[in-house]
Structures are given as C-alpha cells and as structure tokens.
Image 1 (cartoon, helix red, strand yellow):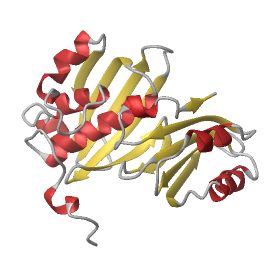
Image 2 (cartoon, helix red, strand yellow; image 1 turned 45 degrees about the vertical axis):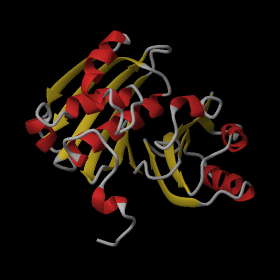
Image 3 (cartoon, one colour; image 1 turned 120 degrees about the horizontal axis):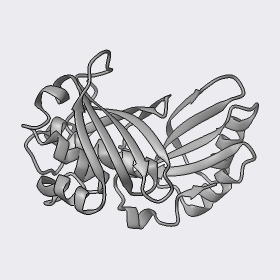
Amino acid sequence: MRFKDVFSIIGPAMVGPSSSHTAGAARIGRAARQVLGEPASEAEVTFFGSFAATYQGHGTDRAIAGGLLDFATDDSRLPDSIELAEEAGMAISFGQGTGLFPHPNTVRLRLTGAQTGTELTLTGISIGGGNIEIVDIDGFGVKLTGMYPTVLIHHMDYLGVLASVTDVMRRGQFNIGHMSLDRKNRSGAALTVLELDEAATPELLHELSALPAVQSVKVVDLNETLQEQKGKDNTR
C-alpha cells in the first residue's frame, strides 16, 4: 500500500478501543449526518460482518450514535452518545444484517430528518486506521472517503451537466481530487460526488446550485463542525 500520511499508520485521535470499529464508525455516522443536512429523528442502524459480531463490545453502536450527533472521534461524550441521542429526540435502533456486503466492517444507515422528514439510506465501510468509504447513498454507487472537503450534487442526467459542473470548478479555481458519478437510468436522477483539495465556498455552492439540471448541492467536511457549515449547504 502506498504511504499517504502518518495517520495511515498511527490512526486518528480518538476515544477507543478500535480505530476501525470505533473511530471509523464515528466518521461514518458523522458523514451520514452531514449528507442528511439536519438532525435525525429516527435512525435504523444495521451492522454487517465483523461490525455485526462485535459492535457492542467495541462500542461501534455508540460511535455511530455519536457521529450522528456530529461528535468527532476524540469527543469525550462518545461513550454516552446513545443516551444523548435519545435525549435529543432521536429514536435509534441497532441490528445485525445478513447477505452480501462490500467489506467486513460495513454499516447501513436509514435516517429520517427531524425537520423535513427527508429520508436517507447510506452504506459505509471502515477500512482501518479510522479511514472510511461511503459506498452507497440512496441507491447511488459512490466513493466518498471523508479525507477531503466533498461536494455532493444531485442532478438530472442530461447532456452537458457534468461539463457545466467542471467548468464552474475551473472558473472558481477548485481542483478536483476525485470524482464519482452514478445515475438511476438514462436521463434520470444522478449523483455526482466531488472530493476537492480545499473547502468549497458559499459562492461556489451557489453557482453550482444555479445550474439548470441541478436539484441540490450539499457538503461533507469531516474537518468542520456543523456550525461552520451553516450557510454553505445550498439545497433547492
């Protein structure tokens, strides 16, 4: 494996016991909270593989709950996060799944937004050292690592949409580190995920959301708090 940074070896600052089962799980929960864009009133959490076998002993359930509350991996409140989630009005349940799954440390989240009733289904995997990949959002196959500021663009799969998106990025001088795109069907709903070298600005998000075929633009940045993200998400 190619060396990336020292955190690939020693892992993140975290509340233990496991970088993959605890820190990675917290980051998956936090990414899901940011994709949802609001607090969750309901959260159905299904663990697969190693997660399913050991989630209680490793505190994976508490890590997911803490992530859904926007707790970082080293937040001292993580051990109490299930109780804190319930106090915040979140009905959260945990279960074990069977069947095919992409990685031994896989979790699927089904969330309902407390403010709008928006529903979100998200699948994430913890690949070690606190590193994660979000591999599915509402049935769209994606790759979202959480290592970089990320923009999610829901749009229609029309000719020239992707070219318009990349032109906005070029004019704003934002470099794309990784891009993934999936669509439901030809000329149907699509989701583009852009991992950027620097955080998106409100101006960039406004310009992206103004494109004719774009339905919504959201940000996932695990280096920011939700308060810092206020004013960035621009959803139509």
